[in-house]
Image 1 (cartoon, rainbow, N blue to C red):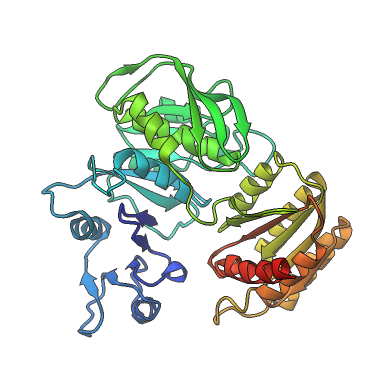
Image 2: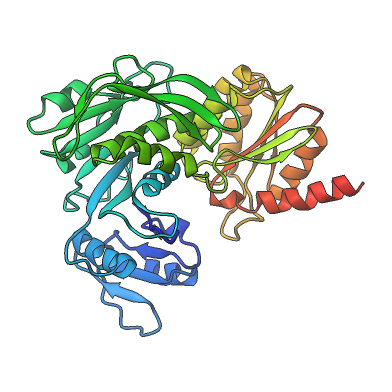
Length: 433
């Protein structure tokens, strides 16, 4: 579970994602208290945990359950309001931070003043060990994009049904099967969105470039939280974010705003004022060649980026991809197959893999077993690749390979946060020469 406060303060239950100043929520309920000290060493400013911690130096708040955690956390972040905020559960396995930020732009002003008691919370549907059933979500958004070419390839998570009984579910129609099951479930109303013509909300006249332009179209009427009927209409949207996957994010965010009775004119203004944060299909260099950086935490994130690369104009593509996210050989095999599938489609000249060992002292080199998986799958599919332990070696090699009108795309998680700094130093040297 990740939460982003209006002040930009990060909240995470993933120990690996703790950064200085963030709030860490310990949901493990393990007897081992080592996680608490690791979070503190990583710079956590506040730690919620069910453990009794007696160390006065640790910024710990003891909680009994998830609901208690939320109450105390929201009181600390937003002040005591005397009631629990309405929680929007944003479900999926991909990075949902852009969607969370778009929803925030609707419900918070630029000066960080909270306009409503609506707070979006990102929930990873793949994290089966996280018990969220006592959070009492007011609304659920099922947001993932599919990794396969066919639509409706994945079932709606049972957890979303359970969390949203007698409430509304906003569902990506191009992603999830089981939508009819959601409609038939007593007390659950669904609003579908996507590019599928059967969706309640869809997009038309899509033009994806530096600015993503499309028409937001309500094709079938639906009801808001207060019972107001939204009739079919169409309105143009200009989103300051690259990548075709952001059309889905905007569709979900605007639909969520309409459900909570926001005026469409206000929604349009909020969405169009939004600027994507760092490492979200971010163009960091545009000269003889183009360099894009994107944060990827799951296989779904890689798929979304590859899909967005298709609409860009370039001569040849070079990919720098982090392989330090998992020690599971099966995940590396899935990743390798995904890369080879897209390498042919995207005219990829070379794939550069890196363990980013210079970005995090806890990261080791890619295990030999995993390396053999990449070698075998890439060789079978005639994909040219190299591997470097260090991120800056991977970047140095990519710059040597780049030619006029080429495209370099860097993909990885937190371990690649230093990539832009390294590139700035290298590009400065090149420009000076």
